[in-house]
Image 1 (cartoon, rainbow, N blue to C red):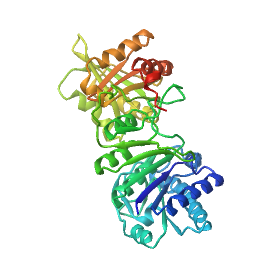
Image 2: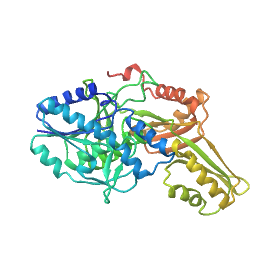
Image 3: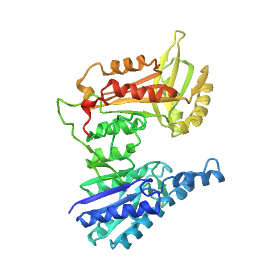
Image 4: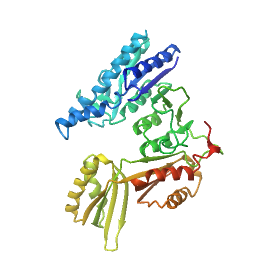
Length: 411
């Protein structure tokens, strides 16, 4: 008998009809002899609706109270699924993050999991019940409800799988696996049978919406076999594994990720003195704003221009902080750009192939796409470009690296 953690996203539980379908799928697995823990998101669109309600009261809701509101979405779906399973003769019990005791830190709206008390879940499994747990939420040491940030239900699923030492964590969603890129942008994108944690971590961090980055981190850290599957279509999905398979057929690039959720800020005319980077980014970090790509250029007049990117929703906050910094350090000006996008190529095959970056730049140059910023790691190259060229860039790169070549099709 295997212990499986299954996580269903918002579209998978977006209506009563779909919750009934999920119940049928869970029942089928249960009848096959598996012990099951099921993690659910809120119904599709519900979290946005709850946030909108909060913002009708206050443009900047108190983070603690916002967590109280948005955590209710998952409570609805877990109760409904438990009812649907019971109706089918499958014993089931639902728990909120607080009831399971998913202990987190106190960073409201983007808390991190510290510990999970698995005793209650194990007792229910031993009694033959399916355990249905609210994703996305936990509780801090003071008893306050916390949430893990958007997409946090994936993290809940993987964290529970790690705590319970589950045989596999299955992420059910509205796609049938991880693709070389978004099929809506490149119709010839293909499903990957297998991808490494390392590659998936890069893909998730660079804009791939299939899995949330922290869920991949958890899975990699605790070596939890992770599989992405379609909620309502049968198929093998994509297995995310710890091992790189040495193969002559190992592609140089496994996938192309992109992210429209980027904004760029530049502080110009900064005195080029030691410690200037900390003076600029210290206040940004203190404001809990995440910085992505960074470029610094020294000018001929002994000043420097310092550019970095942040998430769209933190752009105005970051701009305000940066303007205060500019006044304090005597910088010339702060400028910003919200019409940018990031495109990245990812693959462990880069380690053994030279010239990957130049091949990427050549493909973009052929389409007359200007590169504004560049960032690299051992297995990825990212560029910032004008947002209007995003889809053109993705298609060009997908072709340049032969990801859509008929010879590579295996489906």
